[in-house]
Image (cartoon, rainbow, N blue to C red):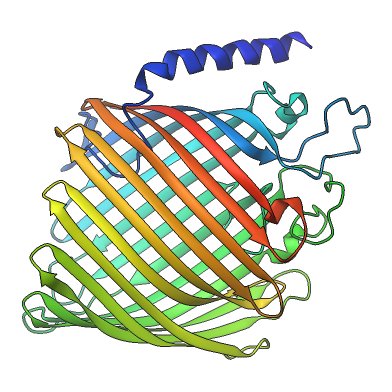
Length: 421
């Protein structure tokens, strides 16, 4: 083994040891206690610098040369496990205001494949990142404007037809114009969004046994798309805690490469949302989705969700949803999804969180996929500027189509520390 590889292995082990005290006391840092930190004063707001360090084991990290392989042109058709390092420096800007408010957050994420479990994995180390912008005008007025942008580069794609081992570059800009005539009991929001997602493989070689574009580096760019969405969302609060809700939108999906059929999906649904009791909130909607593009098809849309406030700091949510979405190669797919989420804040510092979901995907044609996800873990706020986390994620996928990238079980465990100034 070369000296650089040994050096990175030593760094990885030291990092795991250094982060270990947080294990069992913290989890994924999405939500939970306020990260605090004084930051730098910018007008009426604050600019915060953040640094996030994570060690993670991923049992399906990617496709790498098989053990003992001497041919650099051969890659295993099985996803292999690896220990990863995530190094995420970032910034967060908060400028509150009744007339104009701005929230901006983002980070760069260097993902280093250590080679501890699969020596040939280090060449797939890469840069990921995320940035979110939310700019609001006249939030409390009768007519407001919200401009949002979401950018992400990640190995977790939005295309359900593609399996593991693929990098996604995604950007979406959204415009909302909330209109609140009278006292605000009625709110109508015209919406417009435009998104683009581009794909590239994590490795340069197709795994042995690959038989389709979902795992072939030469074909994965066939899933690249541009998505334009326009719609109207409405809410009428006819009782103090109950409202009629409605949503109508049209989705125009164009694919920049390959011969995937473009899609024009119209969705409309309506229902009720409100409190059944002081502790139970329910949302129930129903409607129809129809693809008016080349791959014609339609289905019933529905959502039934209930939230239970067990205590002021403990919530439980369960629900079922059916959606219709466009996708490359197949034209469209229907997703029947059941989910369960729970979160509890203990002592003002310790957050316990668990989410699970089951998806049954029905693609246009004969392909059917099932997905199961479980994400559990605690999170602990040591100081206003220091949060530690740990967690476990389980993801399983089974498909009537062949290929290791869409038929696998994925186990992930991580330890994370975040500093915010």
